[in-house]
Length: 322
Image (cartoon, rainbow, N blue to C red; front, side):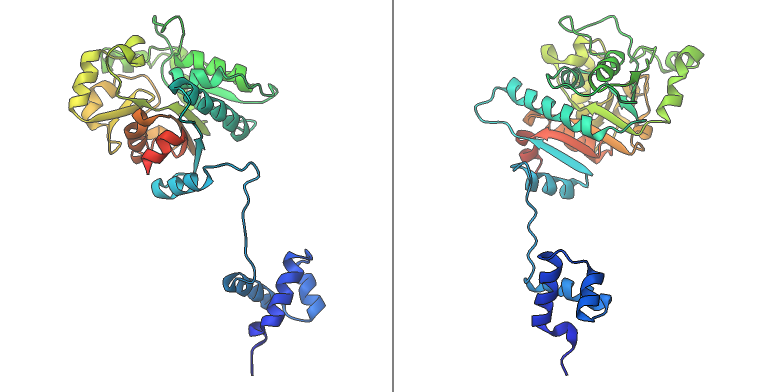
């Protein structure tokens, strides 16, 4: 005798009632006099057999949905946001689109009461300077995760972490605190002694409260184009030396190789006043923003090291990541 769950006419009817007439499983069970467990099995069989075909339609017709999913699976990321850039776009136009999308994503991602860590650099500065405006009645606290004091600006622009925290509070609402230390010291012992001061080390309590960190992903730029050199964080000679040891990039002034390992650059990394890299890796949401083919190796290293688990990039970089 054929089992009721194998009755294809009945399976079709159950699927029609559920998907077309919006009846709940219990309502179908009562209507047909069949157990709810059987109804559930029939619905599953309807999917497996092709009677029911589920199509997920992107409401904004976003071109790169499949690319995002592929990258998430390939690299084990929580989320990937790919921003389109046209072959006709200049490099700056492409980056500007990414900054705009990043600002929109962050405005929807942050939640009231969040403590949000921010690093330094032009990427986050440009995200905060996008034209899009957002509601300001939010209860966020932005926390610089590297020291934010430096005598240097770049072409008159301050991209230190304290300034970034203030700009993010202005952009997204909320408050900010300051990390009252240089980002990098000449000696680890001096750094450790300095950070014992109460007027400075309160920031470590804020580190413990962080729900999210937002960071640019720096590549190993040398010479006149290097933001790190212009800002006084590092010398060209040091960067050249790092290149010989396989450096590919940095997050929050923590340098790493293609596997995300920092050991070969420990002499520099340990002199950085900031949230330790191992602590960064424990934050629930670690958002990295980087675009362009020149950032591909740095992004791969940042993912391999566990420094980011959410990536905002453009299709130029995303396609190379595959």
